[in-house]
Image 1 (tube, rainbow, N blue to C red):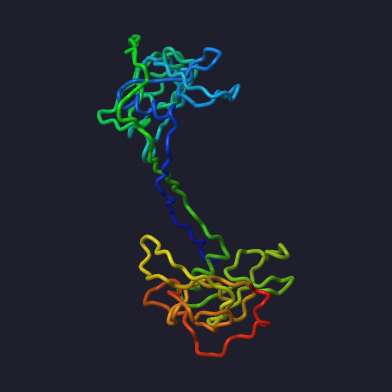
Image 2: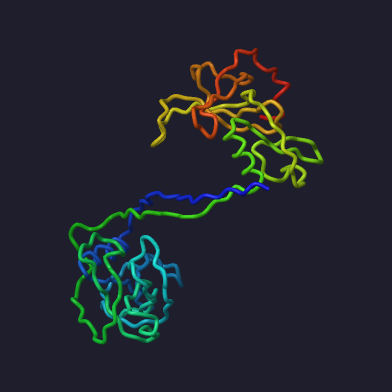
Length: 312
């Protein structure tokens, strides 16, 4: 059996959000080396602050300063820091209840090893040298036996932070599985293969390893195409970033000859306003390409609607 393919993939995008008055004051305070919490109606001080009481759901806006020193309530050692984490050497993730707060704040604790960390140990904030109004303005916590004095700050600042941009990133290894590995390997030879269901005898492209209708495992490979029929399509008028295709262009569902499921592809070699349902097309491969660059008209008469209506 051919080796199943796998590849590292990354999904990454900047997440932009606006801040309400409480979060705005909290992050602006971090920029100014001040930690603010919010006081509930029953007298609890929540850090990080929230805009609604998690118990009563009442709106809360009463900001109060807490100390940059506190006590570790629980922790876990991180042996291998990952990209984007606060420290690039092993550290502890710790929940720290700052002096004056009734809830704990999660952040990194810089310590020489797990033996140096314990529940109940005293710590303080190590501020980042450059601060912009983000949780990363706290570089980490560090061991400290003293108690810091409050500045008496009111929670009012000039040039408030009103929004943040947080990068979201997911690193993972993707494997297409046995069936799609065969499909991808065939594409590198400029062939398109699907798999036939042993029960309903339909051929599915791309194959998934099982019939989506019958739920039966599939293994019989069937070569389809290369020509096919446009079943449905859309006209794209917005240019995608990093995609070197001029708009407008057409993306279509194409039922390859011999297949019982339409796949999608770009239509080229014809004006976008001439593309139509039933148009007969064939793949165009670029030199060294691992999949068709686009599909172009074959010049054949359009397919009769009855021949592809079940594939819409």
